[in-house]
Length: 183
Image (cartoon, rainbow, N blue to C red; front, top):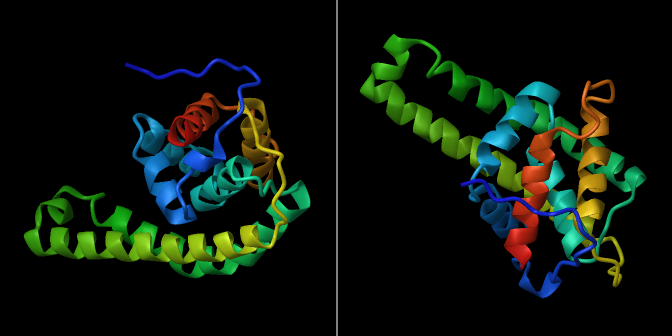
């Protein structure tokens, strides 16, 4: 059953948001439909999921980044993403791309260790992003669903400004999961 969120001006309750960014990311990512939506956005648009989730976390915790701050976040994380996160992801995916590789027990174990290293690399990125979010002065401005969608579009514009769809439906699923996480 697909969960939907009506586009209303409903406010989020930032007191229900997880205390740290990594816990928030894990909570949102574990919601039904979010992982495949994130993977499609990552593969189809080159989107950096930790960056997008960090920006959404700012939106529900009163530290809403501006478009300029989002660009700075991206610039600060780009080297790490290109040096560690994406290469680990490529290796992990390559290990399951061939039937013979995917069937070898030692390769399967190694793939799990590479996957753990990829997650550790994303966690490092999340820690950097959380630190940058902490530099934004808190305000009473909390994003409703429209605000969350605007933030996701700001992030997506960095990676795929010429996309066919202004607001891919996967972004709705992720915004809905964020709202459910902080309800």
